[in-house]
Image (cartoon, rainbow, N blue to C red; front, side, top):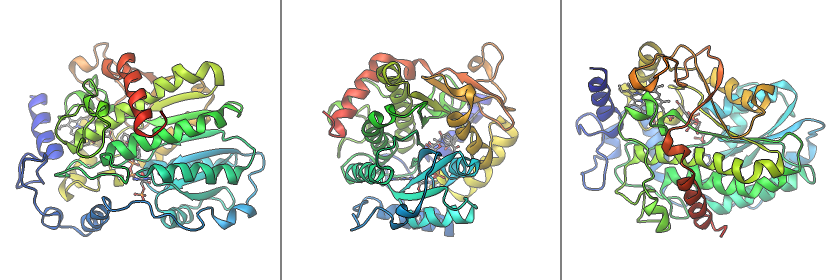
Length: 409
Ligand code: NDP
Ligand code: PMR
């Protein structure tokens, strides 16, 4: 019964197979117009933003290194970069870290003006942070960011890196492309971060007790209710799409037709596999602690901007009262900050989750214990990836193809 309900909800909610309820997914179906499909002011502004996305994302400015930098004193504080710090989980994490007084936060954001505004609105202490342009959908912007960061911090190494930014585009009828021609979710969530990580790992190796966290998700793990019950399921196949170079017109990692919700889940698989590969390749030599984490279902963030209004209203309640997996933005921010700051989290190669009040269902919890479904008030624990995410052979292939795709080999 639960499975039937779940499948129905997921078909309507995720894939939009019911045209009158949502936009259709897939290249063969006829897309409704964006305006007709959304119908709320929040949705409309999101759509306007989205329709601009496939255009040139990255417009280089003459001076991207903020002038204020010279005036800031990092002092003894540890330098931490947070991508996507202008909203949701990234913003709350940056806020928690900045307020400790122990960290100096670099807010690496696509919209620097927005980042400045939300930092002020959220009471970030003055002199505890700086905003820097990072457009993950443009590999040149990633390289420029690294150059700016290095100029800013001069010889001191980067202590910590949090790869948090992401987009979720479940109702796109056809793929949007990054400036470099990659499908948007894979390009921003995985490839942009993959290049960033590779460009910064040597620098972080010079820091003492460096930590690096790439945000993963339950929905990329098919051994969970959130990832194994709700269609579509993450699946990289044999990476046939990556093998072909992963560029327009190839949109999916497995080379199959475009499916926006799956592209997001596949990108999260790549995020988590990247952490395992970084751990295998670099932990012993550099001492950097590499981790991934699932923060809980932060059901009210802008990640769901593309979903219809009814979904955005029902989803938080469903997560709070039915699955128990709901977590607030504030609490999620504390969790991600914990992975960087807590002595408990010095082990490398771990996928952290929190138990909370989550309910468990059938075979997803054979020992009766929750599997990181996330609800509020939970205790941190070392979670297990699905077999597909832990698969070393696929992870190695993913790593090699990604290197080629971002121009590192
Ligand atoms: P939000 O949409 O609130 O935040 C995403 C952030 O990424 C924003 O700061 C956004 O910038 C930034 N971003 C988007 N596109 C780009 C780009 N092209 N270049 C640079 N930055 C970009 O979502 P969440 O806070 O929910 O998501 C944060 C992370 O948490 C993601 O990795 C997501 O996968 C993960 N996650 C979220 C869950 C949830 O339930 N919400 C559950 C599990 C994992 P801007 O402010 O300009 O939009
Ligand atoms: Mg899911 C314990 C059960 C659980 C958890 C923890 C999540 C998390 N979800 C659970 C169950 C279910 N969800 C069930 C039973 C259904 C069908 C009724 C369901 C549906 C659903 C939809 C339609 N859930 C969703 C969607 C989305 O569009 C979200 C998504 O998949 O984004 C990729 C989502 C999520 N559920 C979660 C989490 C964390 C998400 C956000 C996904 C993410 O950011 O990775």
